[in-house]
Image 1 (cartoon, protein in one colour):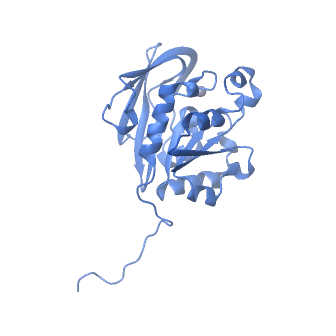
Image 2 (image 1 turned 45 degrees about the vertical axis):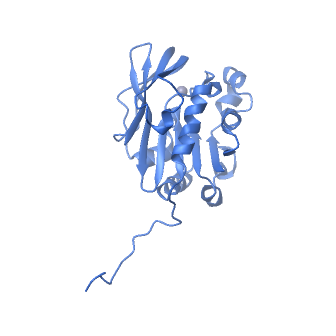
Image 3 (image 1 turned 30 degrees about the vertical axis):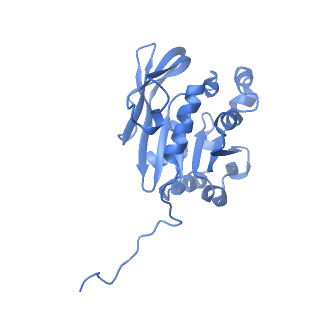
Length: 238
Ligand code: ZN
């Protein structure tokens, strides 16, 4: 069983009727319903939980973390973001969705601005598979057609991905590195661009398939309980 924890800031769904209509019980519960199966078990936590619901114990028992945030990144305490980053360095997998490009843990892991260009026009997006042999692209075909998405465009202020799986192409002409993979010490990181809150992106079967593939890809292969820098005084050979 792969243990997944979804963090959702859960603000738009309470405050904006158009978002509530799409996700009446929150993006986290839509993801839980869409992702759970005989191999994947999903817990959810939100910003209003004490310390975002994120404890050391939760992180130790999480194989893959999923993060969705947008308007309240600044309300996530720095020490919580640091804990999440360290859990990744020690081997936990993590998936950042859409506007989580500006979340504290993503920025800590990337070490860059993570800025991009954006526009809310409801552009049609084609999410093109540019790496068909990659485990995250399996079962997707050539592209995912999204009738409406928030437009994200390059330049995207990230370090060069270790692997690029998807490129988004928008009606207005923009392109965007929509599915990016990195290894960060012992952990794996996947960023996936679709997921604006006013469109039913997390009800789309292909989008859920990508996230599920990413869960299987990011699950820990090797995990340590501490990051150590041991002083080895004795040489191996005299
Ligand atoms: Zn958005």
